[in-house]
Length: 342
Ligand SMILES: [Zn+2]
Image (tube, rainbow, N blue to C red; front, side):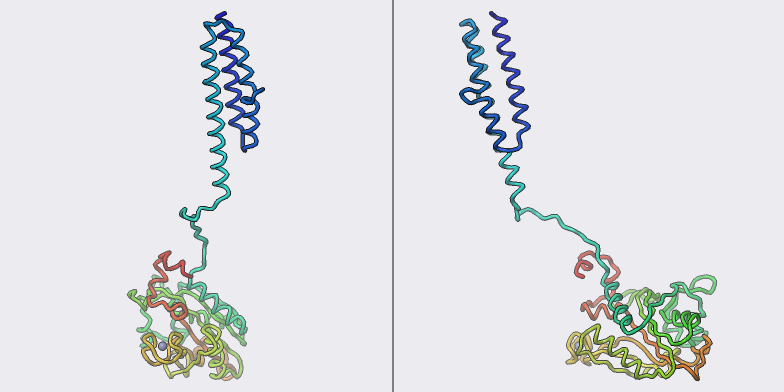
């Protein structure tokens, strides 16, 4: 009879394995309930095994009885555990726990300077200006000579130049692009040249050894200073709003005659006077003027026939005014806390 007892125990082992495997595959309460009914209900598989007791000798019964009860307990607790597990998973899938730390995205963005540069390009494109480019490494001729800045001209002192071997240099302004375009094209010309420039400036709140500039140039017959003022005025209003006025003050540049500095109404205080505009209500923007006949001669244009204007603007300066930033170095430090704000 001992073999009957062992055979019964083996049968229970098979049932146990089968139960656990079926329960493991369950993904919802319905499945768990089906397993419960299959194994534990009155006519289920486990109660069915209690009939085995009747086939055993009185000595063997207690052992099998114990095993049956142990299995019953195991089935019951396994079912409960599985149910809890399913409920937890469901809760986790359906609920958003707002107290948990979130996953942060860092989507790519345009640098604030490039955003302002895009604005500038758009405004001038709408006024019919083409966008031209030139090399950052220039020859002395394009950067100075052709722009009426011969050697020993005092204006060269204002351009603290990075000289390179072989008579080359890092361009100190985007004006050489004017020359390159005029050499290639006949009037009428309406162009802007955005790009990076370099000067030996020690970095501080308002200086950087490299910076972005936009050069503008228009050449045709009968172009006058009034055209220049009109274009700068439209630009100022599109960039900073309808209430911005412009003014021109006499100045000097070797490549324009007459030359002027132009100012915008202070965008911080609206012209009332504040710290940024030093109480004047005006912000200095950059220089402009009528193209000097000497420059036309350098590119083979007839100065008797054509006139034109040129202007420059510093992109950092405009970006600092637009976003009210008081330190130019912030643009180049790649600090995400700064860059994320744009
Ligand atoms: Zn002001």
